[in-house]
Image (cartoon, rainbow, N blue to C red; front, side, top):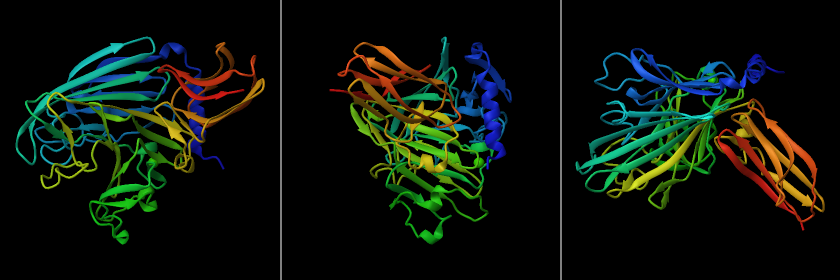
Length: 429
Ligand SMILES: [Ca+2]
């Protein structure tokens, strides 16, 4: 039986699909609660960036299901001598818990640079701040730069991070993308967290006492009671980190999925892990891609492996986190997905079988924005087929194409406002 939420998704998608292309994507200055903000808008999302409060984004209104996917808490005005919960996505560096709570990025405005292009917009925020290492007390200084790119016809927000040690000596820090979603508009039964992997670092798990997991220890993953969210008035909470390149919060009732997808994290030319963090209380949850498996500045812990990131003088940590929405994708599909990026997910390994003068393509895909699946014969460059992909559902491309040469290579590309990327390739002969 189709539920009403899914019917509404289909309705809104139909409305959005017929909107004129001139809606494209915009980046404009505005104001909320007396604070300056930037607004990014295209046909699928409207998002506010509250840079004076380090909320980037503060809001993420999903036009496909007509819900605000991020919690909207205290207004931006008022006394900000201490940290206030505004909801949204809070940037936290050089730590999340501790003093100042959520680190330094909310304590002063960022320097902002905005630029608009035909099919995408770019907003860069930068802030440099000194802080004392929680163990040694030694002064360190970081330059934090976040560049957000939004595309026409896409829910994807690309978030490029650059964290540079501009101090006089070595620096260490933590950083997490502290996201406060309530997917589907409410944090309720049927919501779930998932990240792919076979182990999780459990920081605390007092909301699941019967599991008797020691604090700060590895545990096998997935843990069903941790994956499935259920509102509860029980005391306690849960915080865990799964080493993984992506994590999601989904609502299996409405088949909405908020995804956070990370690139490799580079410090100089060495790669360090990305952890998908999940923090849950009785009434809500956080989705937190993190460079460390611990996010507070307790000085007795910072010297443990994986608890802070080391930067030599002048060294830089660089990575990208994509935030995007999938629709029409179930929990069972997410938990068995083959691969995920900010643009698409593939339910199985994509297949291209070339046999004499024919090729068989089999791809099952969901996209986060308007795209085309393009099948090309190489080296001629002939386009053999094009399939329009739209967000809202899983689409299967199962087709035969004829080739001009039995030794041809067949390449399958995904094309969208972010560019063209290869999904699969097959060669005959
Ligand atoms: Ca929900």
